[in-house]
Amino acid sequence: MEPTAPPRPAPIKRTRVSGTWVAVIVALIVLVFLLIFILQNLASATVNFLGMSAGLPLGVALLLAAIGGAVLVALIGAARIMQLRRATKRASRAVR
Image 1 (tube, helix red, strand yellow):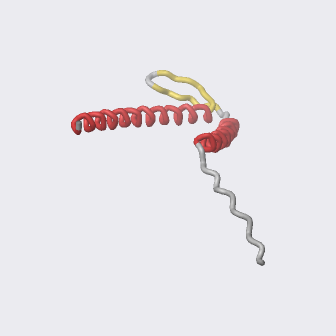
Image 2 (cartoon, helix red, strand yellow; image 1 turned 90 degrees about the vertical axis):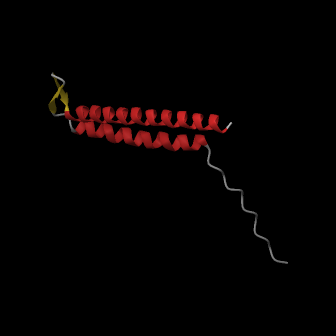
Image 3 (cartoon, helix red, strand yellow; image 1 turned 60 degrees about the vertical axis):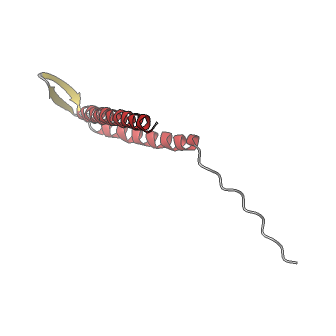
């Protein structure tokens, strides 16, 4: 009689928690790179905006610009999501 192979264990399904864990690790890596970038770019730069002027480290100024861009993209994305939800709600009411 031939020995039979042991049964394979069932594959483990991915969960939201595992996805969150991966996102946290990626975010920590990105934050480390941002910290390194800021620490390597500490030379002062003059930033002018709407008649105001401030001296900031170059890395901090670029980081603030990136955050401002991300906020703008998030606002536009949120407006589009709200627009699509309203259109979906109107379409579902029309079907009833």
